[in-house]
Image 1 (cartoon, rainbow, N blue to C red):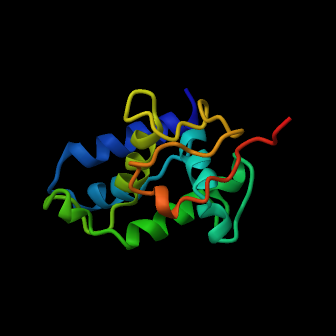
Image 2: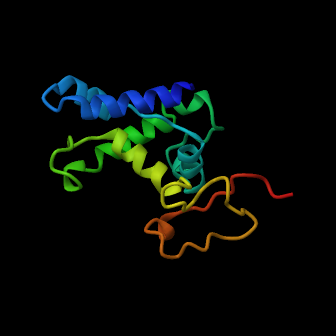
Image 3: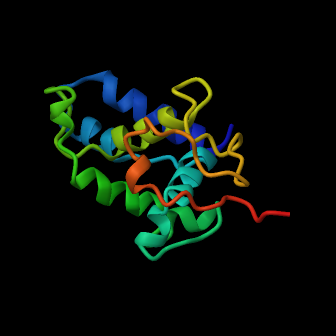
Length: 142
């Protein structure tokens, strides 16, 4: 099993095990697992460029200023209690999971980096991020 899967499973266990154990909840809420879907979304939307940290998928995602740090910074701008009053205000795992669900085939399956045709502009005009999305190509055109 990969480190990413272990991290995702441990985060979920810490979050649901005992809500009265504040350190467990805080730790689970802060755990972020960057997979190719999350990385590709940050790249495709232009977020990596805007934060000045454009990089390829891999160890750089967890380096200073990488994808995980960006998710943490974005989580600071979202009060997760608006979605569920039981959530902590700053909830990086929730933000990471929301991005993953946005892209995953088992989720909404939008902006899935495995399916994007970079030869054409994005046609998801109803996407809430459409007007602010840079639609950066994931792969070079051939």
